[in-house]
Structure formats: C-alpha cells, structure tokens
Length: 480
Image 1: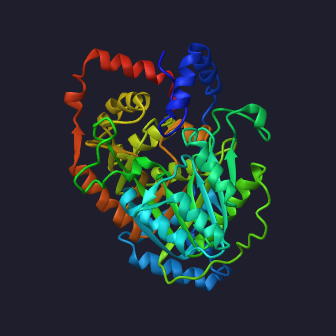
Image 2: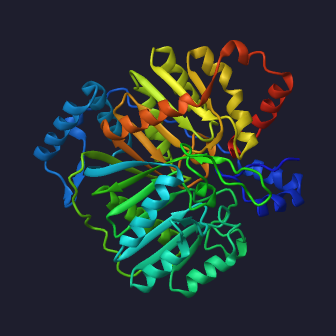
Image 3: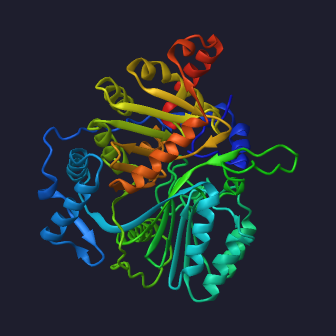
C-alpha cells in the first residue's frame, strides 16, 4: 500500500520507510485522523465602505483617519482598477478584521537563487535578534557559506538566535546539525515532536508547522514557500540546469517564490513567531521588544495571516475564498499542490463562468504523486467552466501564490489543499496594490511560456488507468 502524503512538502524518506514498515494499519489511522470537515466560509453579502472601516497601522501604531484616507486615496489612484482595489480593501476588512500595515517595502524573490542570498544578507545584518521558523530546516549553503556557520557567528556576536523547526519536516536533518547549534548557544525548539512521550501537550502526527519565516531585528522578514532545504541549492530556472546528484542523475529544479518585507508589517511577523514559540512551551526568549519597527518609504500595504488548525475559519482560507468570490477581471493561481476544497473549486468555476480570466498554473511533476493525481481529477470540471490550465514542465513547481485583478496578491506557505485548512500552521501575506501583483503576473506569464496547456478535448481521451488512479487517490483528499 503506498504511504500517505501527510505533509505539504515531500514526506522525509526516513519516515516514509517507517510508515511503510507499519503498512496498512498506520495508513488507516492517518486516514481516520484526516476525516474532519472543512469549515464552511461565507462572504458578507453587503460590503462596507473601505474608507470607513479599514484599519491601517504604521511604524508607531494605528494611523489617524486623515492618514488612512490619504493612503487609500493614493492606492486607489495608482491601481489599474480603482474600483477593484476599493472592493478588495473592503472585503479584506470585513472578513479578516485586524490591521493592515502601510509603508512597507515588499520584494518578490524567485527560487533559491534569489532567496538564499537575501536570507543570508538579513542574517549577517542582524544585531539583536534572529527568529527562524521552518518546516524543513537543513544546513543549507549559499555563496560558499553554511547556514549553521552564519547562525553561530551571529550568536557569538551577541545576537539572540531562536529556531523553531517542524519535527516531521526536519526529521532527515542529521542530529549533529542541531547539536552543533545548541552547543554554540542557539536556542532550538521542535514543533510537535514525533515521539508522543516528549510532547508538551496535544499530540498529533497530522498537525504540522508548515510556516517558512525569517525575521531579523524585527525589521526584515522573509516568508513564502521556500524551506531551508538543499532542494533549492539547484541552479535557477533561468540558468543552465541543476548539478548532478551523487549517482549521476540530474536533480530537478524547484520553482518557488518568497517575499522580502521591510517596514511596519514585520512587527506582526515577530509577534506571531513569539506567540508560536510560547504555545509550544519553548524556553523564555528574554526581552523581545516587537512594539516598533523602523519606518520605510515603501508603498506596499500588507495584511499578515497566521493560520492554525482548530480555528472556526482559518484566516488564509477565509481571506482567499472571499477575494476569489469578488474577482472581476482576472484570477491567476499558482498552486504547488492543487487539491481544492469544495468551496475553493466552486469559487474558481463560478469566477470563470461570470467572465473572469481564470488561469491555473500547476506542476507536471511533483514530490507527491497522490496530490498530482487528485489535481488532475479536477481538470474536467474546471475546463468545462472555462478555466485555463497549464502544467509547468521541467521543474518541480512549489510556488503558492494568487493574484486577483492586478491589485490583490497573496504569497506564503499555505497550499491550495485540505491540509493547509485542516492541519497545518501556516503563514501568508496579502499585499494590496499594483507593485507585487505586477511582479507576480509577469512571473506567471514567464512560467506559462514553459508550460503545457491542458485542452478539454484531449484531456477527455486520457487512458482509463489514469482515471482509475485519480479516483483512488481522491479517497485520501483530506490528508493531502
């Protein structure tokens, strides 16, 4: 019996072998634990006025009504469609509440080639604190330096360094890596330990910390889909290809996206890290003053979404559904694992039927054959509704991003799947305005150029064995 993919990235090989040794009983246990209901999320029927209800924060706390109105006016003026922006601002506030942060600089990072240098630069620049939270935490290399060496050097320089890593996602990382960091004064904490006897409270193999976050000095944050994983050390997509593995085979490139953020929104990322650390029973971090963040002259307005299982409606899920339901011009989705809930699939098909340009970019190969099969089982309904579907070829597509109407974008760790709604702790950022949306749309177009379009007429002719495989893996949908 094939093992279930119970994590959003590749399930570590060591644990895969363990699951296989237990066989069907453990698979059934995981399947039963996955039989939970996806929450029903409703979009408000009457949208409030953005000007009257949007709460915007700056480097020194909430902005005045006059300052808020000035920012909204500027955003509206710069947006390709001012009506669309106003609508998204209103629905964001109605659904999510909380604070939008203005005055940020957000820069899109593509693949490990862009992201790892940005991460290492942020770590080198840290003078007070370094917070890292990753599903997969490995001793990656960038520019001839290893992650462990940089972290130990910053700790020796007096920087407070704390690392929260998922115990399943990082199970393949040699213990010597953690031992060396611990001996050098780096504070480590494993999220939801694999061994239930070492658990600090509620234990479930299914509940995982899927977040990817680096925060330096409460002033710079890097988030997205990129793990601290050697998978991203391969050559960039626009380069000459990946280096061969030890057995001579070419490693597949991983196509992914992160966001480098400086400005007031970083306050919230720091707070979420500290909250998560305390929830997991981590040792005291000492003084963690995250009340202020240095101002920037950036134009990006950002909402930070920290989602956890057990919420009535996970923040990412509620926000995404509401945004898709009010899309007017275009809805472009890049999904590493496309296993949509009923409501997500409904929102996509309804958008296409009302004339929205809906485009879906998904992988043609994946580290999860189960997710790939379920992904393809959705094609017929989507194509019939008018959705354009593209399978990115030549790489493992791992990006998680959505762009709507050229003014609303979301990037983070959440996948378009049930696991991100039901089990994972996730972290995402909504960016309002045209800057980040424009970059993501350009990268989307570039990826589509290297993708194969799925046509309904040909798709209906696929072999029966493929349909059978799709039907089988649909039985495990809530685990994917």
